[in-house]
Image (cartoon, rainbow, N blue to C red; front, side, top):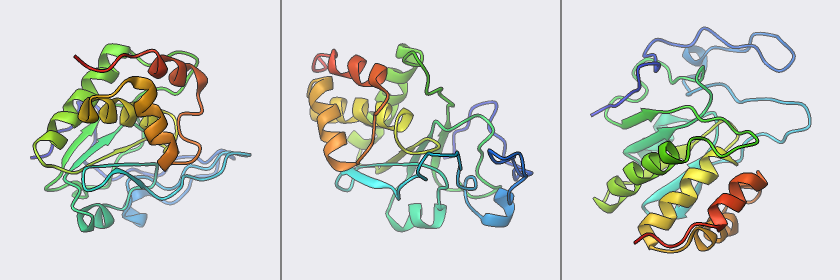
Length: 188
């Protein structure tokens, strides 16, 4: 079953401008979710990291859905920017949820973020393997992945954040996100 929000398109992206304003290759040309995001002075996304063996991965763009299937990942939570979509057919057979979040000065809607994490944690508890990804694979995906770890392992937000940061360098470097996570008790 494939799940998409109303803004998720199944048509191939027509190319989006890079930081310099030039149109890059389209997702139809690359076969990936989006082309790699490039910003001056920001390192590109690292390859996905396995946070909970056989259960949870965290990554950035682009997403190679052939690799996703090879890893046995059957759930993808895409919280990258609203204009980043997979090419037509890329998510066939995968539970795919598109829920764009903003990496900013505030935690994105805490109820939504916790709901998304609960959705992923529930699927992981049912034996499925999930990938949570945003554009660079650091802040938004780290926030939600930490919440998933918190739910699955039954630990505090601080313990979940430490678990994720020990496995994926540079994740949750947004101090507002990190402080919010550290304040969360273990789930009841």
